[in-house]
Figure 1 (cartoon, rainbow, N blue to C red):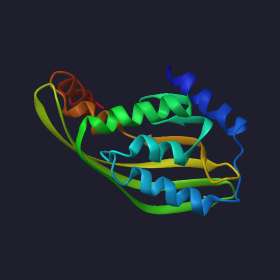
Figure 2 (tube, helix red, strand yellow):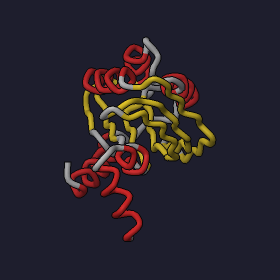
Figure 3 (cartoon, helix red, strand yellow):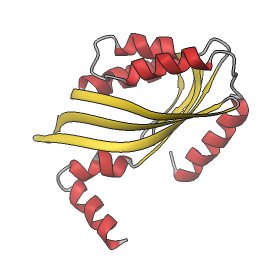
Length: 164
């Protein structure tokens, strides 16, 4: 998805999914528990309990609108990790909008190399009346967290960073 498509998709999702304040606390508790360990064997079920069947999800790498696609993606992501943690440091609420500041750390292996990544980010969330996530937009530097660790691609990512 091109950058403008992502921006337009996010803006449209904010119109399509106005959110509800009714069950934010319950939804936040499920959200934190689901992301605490992405290697959990129950991750797909946890994601299915956390998100609504129709949703907007963008983690800067992929965008999903259906729960079953998101659950499959998260299961695949978790199975590629040997260790994972997401620590929530702050939650800011503004009506139906919830902003979660977090640190993610994971260990994996890619292209014959061990990868240990630590990154920071913020997620913008909205919940439905039952406390299920209907809008999830991540703001984080996936290039630094993921691509900078890979051979060849990482060289170009690091070089571009230093040039800027």
